[in-house]
Length: 161
Ligand SMILES: [Zn+2]
Image (cartoon, protein in one colour):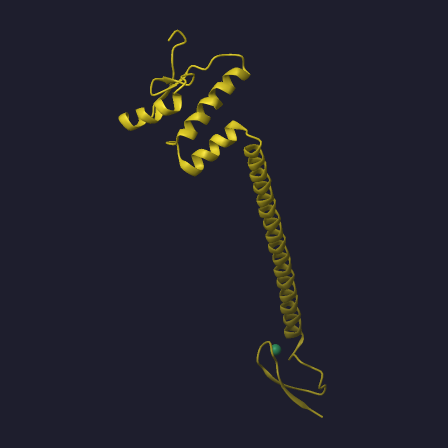
C-alpha cells in the first residue's frame, strides 16, 4: 500500500510504503533532527536564563529584607539611645521633628557641644551668632538673635574671648 504524504520540512509531496515515514528523504530527516536539536538547545538556554533570573530576584529580595532589617535595628538603636537620654540622639530627633528654631534644640546643641569638648578634656570654642555655648542663657539668646538676624552663624570663637 502506498501512502501519500507531504514532507513537513520542504513541503514536497511524496509516496511511501511505510505509514511511519514522515520526511521525503535523508536530507530532510537530517534537517528535522537539526531543527529539533536547535529547539532543544534554545529551551535549555531559556531555562538557564530563567533560573538565573529567579536567582537574581531571590538575591535581590534577600538583600532588600536585609536592608530593611538593618534599618529597623538602627531605628531601634536610635530610639533606645533617645530613651537613655543620649544627647546627640535627642538633638538629631529634635531637629528632625521640630527643626532648629526651638529652645530645646539649642539646649541640646549646647549640651552636646560641651559634652564633646569634655570628652576630649577641652573647652568648647563653639559660638552661635556670637553667643558661647557656656552662656547660661545660650538657648534663649540664640533664639532671640535668630529672630533679629534671620540667620544662624555657628563658628569657633577665640579661646581668649
Ligand atoms: Zn523534504
